[in-house]
Image (cartoon, rainbow, N blue to C red):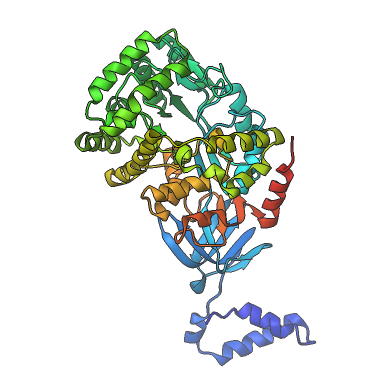
Length: 510
């Protein structure tokens, strides 16, 4: 039993009419005389720790420590300063805000590692509040023009307690022709093209001058320009993600230093039994199509080879490819929520369409109309086969120990920002990850990717206080990540009432 002599004296002295000073002196002498010196040495004097926020009796879940029951978490400023067992508390707490976490679960804040803030400009102002309200405290923007995404990052840095952390890549570094050239609404101007090493160097200089957090390479790059971009990024110590260029094989791209791949893009080609012949055909199609529209040329190549490749996978070749990815730390961001959307069709669910009410009115109306229209189309057999391949590949990646990060590609294909990340976690579990591995993919792994794992991704002392408080255990059902009681961003508590106010403020906006 813990005993605080100072508090005991104060409690008694408050009830006596004697002078507090004289009485305390007398009482102290009496107490000292009533116990032996040996006993006095055992009386603990607990230090008092000042904090801004305390969460007691809480179950903590993170990728390193798994599930820890009955913990007490102290937050001061924007950092976690204590995470200790509540039953063996070695300190007293002085805090203006105390949360009783009994029956609740505390996780690190979530990442969406594949986002496009500028894909739908009308939606951009609503994306930060949507992320925060759904427990997404960090995002990685994987393609947008600098003049659009750098102001968003600056906004986030200026107000970290009310916006997610933002990492940007700048525009897609593509070849000629360029896929996302702004020619259509479905192909907004997310990319820039480089047909020569010199043009590629100029684009990379612009990215470095803007202090981007990563680079993103794209599918129409030539091997020469791709190699040059990767080499310069290595020299500058900046990570590179992207799509493996159609002119190259996955093993080539990985060996040169690609840090991560998006959407499992073109992995199916590399694992096919006739992968070399497929690459030669792609190169010819690229050469013959130099005057074509970039998005059309890419679509034609995918249409010509994807179904064939999925139907002719070679287990030996797949093992070879995945072994290289694991050895080179070429991580995968599968974006299952967009890769399987045409067959899973979660956008037809009532709960999904209910999330549209927080979108700008024009976007909401378009999404309802288009998602319902798309839902009436037949599911093609080749899409079913591709979806099956995608889910099977998650299991193969896990077996091969290839690291996975969680990302959605929102807001493309009716993916509501924030809400869609929880669907991504459920799909990762459907693909073969455990709930804890899915949580790791959305917490610790992105932090490690950016070398921020000394600051983010776990619930432990010294980490930034980016946290989510859940009403149910996500290890029992990964969909419990949607049962958010509170979000803590940069040390600021956003309780359920505050989160509901954020969402209410979005509803009905133009």
